[in-house]
Image (cartoon, rainbow, N blue to C red):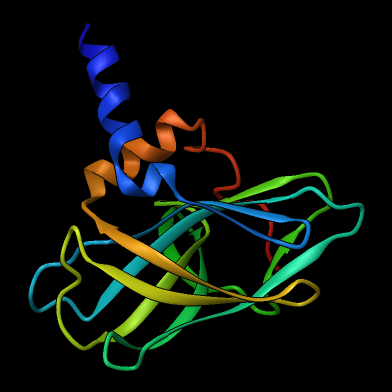
Length: 167
């Protein structure tokens, strides 16, 4: 019963229901992480499925400057036993027929120089730029980390794509 209620709660969240299409790309579960008032950075997460016969690359992301000064594509990487974030040079590869998940602990969008806190329940327009498919702007909901983890665990995403596609 508790598992059923948890699943229903996840399905009722705005991020779990979000889906957009751009050419052969299917973009699901876009969400930004809520932040405390003085946080200088935040993360953005989503799942991209390339249904086409050719690969594509997520090359950039942007948000209104009053929300964040810049957005970078990042990955978590283990270096000498220490987990660190690194910018993904050249973009995040989206191989044909595969799904790439940007999620906590793996590939993600990194928002820098926040103009204020990201508040759960709000939405912010984020523009994603792909090498082949072009641009799409999504109204990404803001959610807490627990809700974000539940969304990606329910969708089977925690662990897949976490360290794979990049460079």
